[in-house]
Image (tube, rainbow, N blue to C red; front, side, top):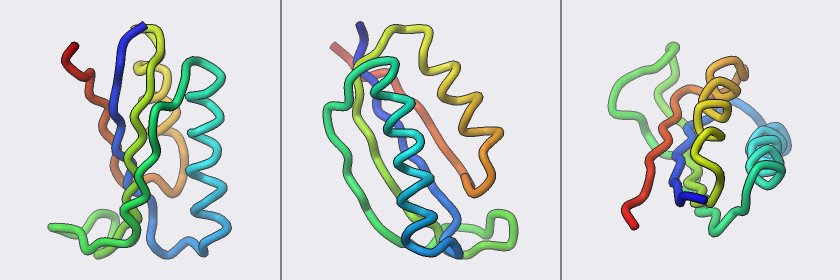
Length: 94
């Protein structure tokens, strides 16, 4: 098991329920394949540059522990999910 950190930027035009459901989807996916260590909701922030004609995004940081092959699957799901503007997954140093 390895430790990872992922940052997710979702579309700010989604209402609170839709945004929470989107983040909840990823939380349950991570819990099914590992354990969540912490979730940090940063809230709505202005983007440094427009992404898909959006100037704001909702930031969420999730720290989790999983098998080394899971982050590739998580990244694939991020890319095919509508409402996700940007995402990154980082392996933490031991």
